Image 1 (cartoon, rainbow, N blue to C red):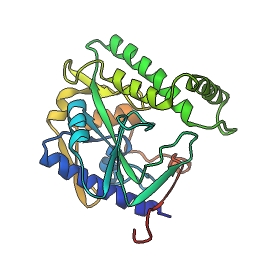
Image 2 (cartoon, rainbow, N blue to C red; image 1 turned 180 degrees about the vertical axis):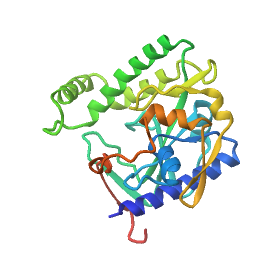
Image 3 (spheres, helix red, strand yellow; image 1 turned 135 degrees about the horizontal axis):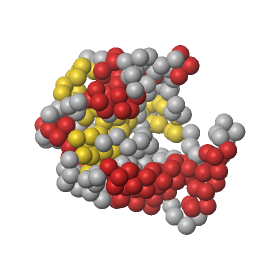
Length: 265
C-alpha cells in the first residue's frame, strides 16, 4: 500500500508534469481549494491532505483534455463512459485507487483533480439561482455514490434513498454529463465573473481577469500558479485561513485504498 507521504509525492509529480504542459501550451490554471491554502499557509501540502486540486478556465480545460497525452498518465473526465465525476482527473498509471463508495470508476490511480471554471450570469441574483440548480444536481450526484450508513444524518440517508430512486431512470454517468453541460450555460468571460460550477463547495465568484494575472507560489520544491487576489478567494472559502484547525479536524475525509499496480512501482 501507498503511505500518505508517498501519495503526496506522486501527486506532486503529476502536478509538475501538468504545470510544465500548461506552460508549454499557454494554458491557464490556478491552484484551488485546499491545495491553494496549503501553498499559502504551508508552502506545500497541508500535512494531512491527500489530494491536489487545480482549476482552469473552460476554454483552457477543454484544450487540455483534447491535447494532454503523456506516457505514465491518464486523463479521465465526463467524456469517458461510466466516469462518475463532473470534472477531470489526471492519474498516475503506475498506481490504483479504489474508492469506498457504492458507485466507483475502476480506472483510477493516484490523481489530481482539474475543475473547469465557467462563466456566471451578470447579476448576483441570477448567479445564485443558476448555482442553486447546479447544487441540487450535485447533491443528487453524490447521493448516488454513497451507501446508507449509521454515520450519516437522517437527512443524508434520506437523500441517498432519493438518489437510489432516480438512478432507476437515469444513470449516474448521465447525470454527470448533464451537470457538466449545464455548467457551460454562460461562456467564460462573457460577463465579469466566473466560478467552479461542477464541485461540492459553495458558489465562489472569481473575477475572470484574475486568470490573466497569475501569481507563482512556492509549493514543496516547486512553484505553481495561482489566481491574482487569492487572499479574497481563501477568505471567502475558509474565513481566517491562516489559523490552524482544531486537532480533531486535522485529517482527510477521503476513503479509499491506494497501491502500486506492479511490484516494480
